[in-house]
Length: 131
Image (cartoon, rainbow, N blue to C red; front, side, top):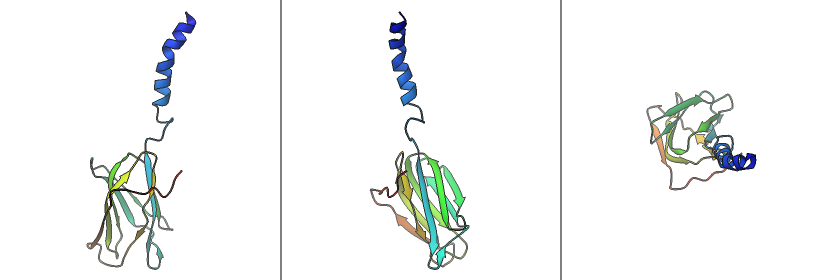
């Protein structure tokens, strides 16, 4: 009887274990560096917006111009970088898959923040970095 109960609960145990977030990576990350022609750009505002849900996350670059968004749900995103004295950078259609770690390095150009450089993403993204 004890063996029969063990076999009866084994599928439930597997379902709960394999379906948990700790088993597989269900989110991704977007990382990168913001630079200009003279080097890194600290304190730039970086925004990542899910194009389907409208959920937006933002951060600022550190002293070396680096930024990172972790635990991002898979989906299609737009990516905006702005800082006073530079043209705003905007990239749309960025596809993030579960478990992916996408690198989005940006070269800002001097100009008015109201000017925007727009980049449309192609049909496929290349995962250039892995965990």
